[in-house]
Length: 252
Ligand SMILES: C[S@@+](CC[C@H](N)C(=O)[O-])C[C@H]1O[C@@H](n2cnc3c(N)ncnc32)[C@H](O)[C@@H]1O
Image 1 (cartoon, rainbow, N blue to C red):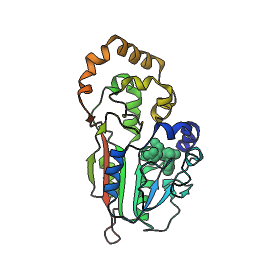
Image 2 (image 1 turned 135 degrees about the horizontal axis):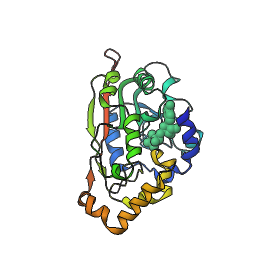
Image 3 (image 1 turned 45 degrees about the vertical axis):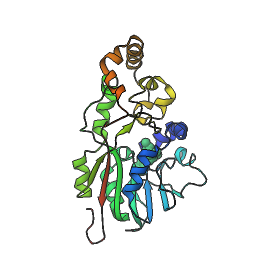
Image 4 (image 1 turned 90 degrees about the vertical axis):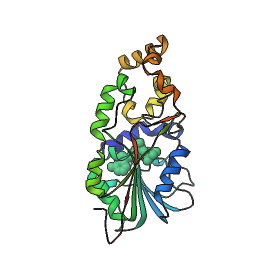
């Protein structure tokens, strides 16, 4: 329950800083296919929940549940590791940027497979992906993320065959997760931005932030990393992982 407590502590400003990005939403909704009902596990404030379909949200942190719109999908307070639903209750199960927070992600993933009839859709980060400029300034944070996020191979051990699609992050991404500000480096100096990124919320070292501020002021950042400014979107290792399940041929 450590992650739940964390989100009860840091989650208050989430709604403002973590607005679903419409381009990423389109990819997730497409991946959900024609599933008539969806469970969104680790649902937070409701980002990326498909519109016009039956959705049930699962979220353990009260601070996140409180920020959900009154019009959002009904929410069950529970954890991924013990979903309170019978087998095959939903057409699809989705989990967006949450699996690395689960105390036992394997148990949680098995639960997603158990409750879904047709498919499991994950938006996650590949811990084997190449380093970006963020590693120069936040090396310990990125190293910790490499340990927290399950590898794609480990996910496949539970999901079986999966389709993995890179989600290239637009330069003006509206969902302020760790990599979202890759072309807006000064954003990481804003404590409000950092407070909505779990990896940075507990206080990044002032030395790292001072180095970033200094490099931005002196032009050192641009000399070293300015080539990224030419791009509209880049691959930072975010991945859409889709496993098709059926009751006769389960993902497991
Ligand atoms: C980075 S937020 C993502 C929220 C939402 N999916 C989104 O895309 O905005 C991670 C969420 O996972 C939730 N979480 C933490 N541990 C969990 C667990 N064991 N089972 C389900 N959700 C969990 C947190 O409370 C938080 O709401």
